[in-house]
Length: 463
Image (tube, rainbow, N blue to C red; front, side, top):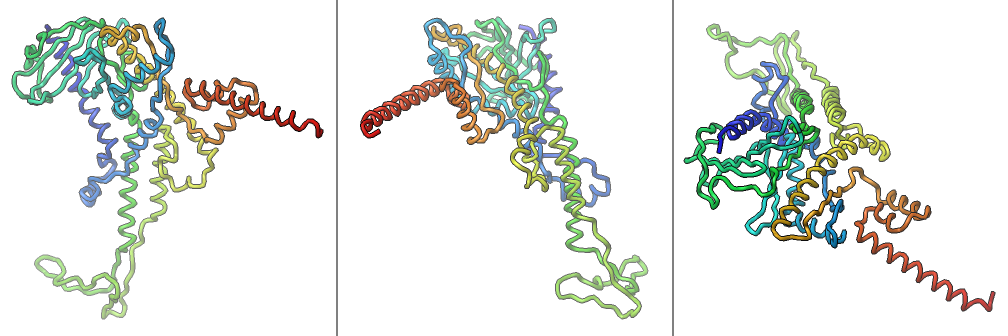
């Protein structure tokens, strides 16, 4: 066992920690107060320290809402295994690890931070299980010669006894490391680890699957590259939006309580301090009248900032956020979009649909790889029907389709003579449901024709 990979993994994970925390904070609404002058910070910094008009969450969620795996299509089934049996096997494997819930977490983590990981490894009974892994805890080393091939991977975590653990996965073995005593994960170095001897098999166990069992979800990432966070171009716009809204709130405060002045008012001043003596001569409030003895004196109010213009600046940043990130305007809470037609919103939504479909292709390839590996794990555990089984995910459509429009399209396809089974599949039905519906529709049609013929024969003498 060598500490070379261990040290490299710890160094890389430490280097990325700040970036990952930065994007997590922006998604959660924990933003810095940027673009504020020193005087603004001194006057209002504490007031707005925890304020944010958070658009980072809807930017991520707009894509996340369109990433739902609804089923599986069979790419290859072993001899003697029907398509329906293969789909049931995929669904059973998916449900075993509660992947309906886990997949959403994986997708969200990948969109927020640019990377997320899933590990597939057998449980005590030999059945494959899926485990979500945060990017703060996993490092992958890719081949320079073959960028899509993972040479090894490291997974770090803090054990229940506060000791630090690291497993390093190679295609042929797994090395286990541990710190002898509790230590902070942010300060630990490779030299602090020793081989983990406390589990059956010792600190090094064989990997019988001839590949690293960790799968990388990296949006906009090429082979062997880290992904791109959904918020990479959004944070500076978010900072500007926050500052504009802070300015708006300050302007509203001064508009509600105008700053007034008095000319010709004589105020007693302490010669030692240079400050007015006694209580302020006037107090603002309902039912109060200000007056002075100087007949040549006067009162007035300082002009306030134009609140509507400041609100327009904030809307401008929301529009810029939508433009840069491809997020539909309906997520941005713009004041001028309430009368936009459905067709116009659909056109504005087209860019988001394309982006969501890209994510479906990227993440779908990784899910298919993970599921097919899980089938190979199941086959080694004695699941003969899983040997060679390959599936690909089926996604909820990325675009919103009005139910009436969908029904109209189905009616047109039927009139064109397209088989009912295909029409029902285009409508959104699963393959088995589409077949059943087509059989039922054909039976109903045959029954209707039979009834029509009976009626015609029974009334023929009167024609």
